[in-house]
Amino acid sequence: MRPLSADDIRGSFVNATPEQLERMPLPGLHETLWDEREYLGWRDPQAARLGYLVHWMGDRPVGIVVRAASGGLRRGIAAMCSFCRSSQPATQVRMFSAPRAGEAGLNGNTIGTYICEDLACSMLIRITPSQPLQPDLVETRARRLLERVQGFTSDILRTA
Image (cartoon, rainbow, N blue to C red; front, side):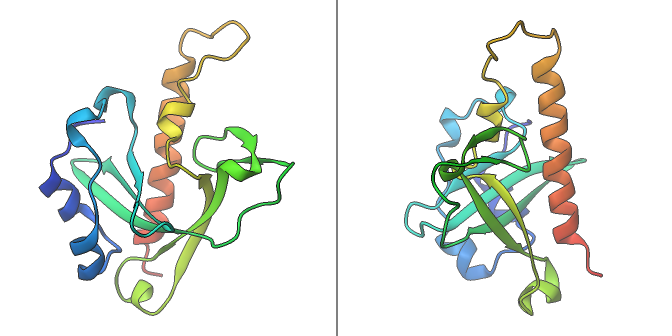
């Protein structure tokens, strides 16, 4: 992922209200390992159900606000993140919804999907599996992760 400034991030959101942008905390950008991310994702420490995702689509960053469902999945079962496709305990995956961009989102139209609760899919795809590593495994996982994030964002941008 190419680096982003605070201004890049704040200006990238397609489904945020002005109030959300004003209150949105930014992650520690000086600590971010940009080469090891397909998107920048973080949760809001002041509004526990809010999260933010920013990634590049072509030559511009695109940000989306997501909201975690109030209830989680049942303990003791496995669940899969729809972005990184990691199977993990259900308590680590959450349903997130995102308002569509524009008038549709203002009218309450949302899209939902299951995502890692901490929005840290970029780290999960880099965990070395116990079996021998395929030479391009991380690159393949990274490419597919970004494709799925961009697909979700494209659905949010779709007006019809």
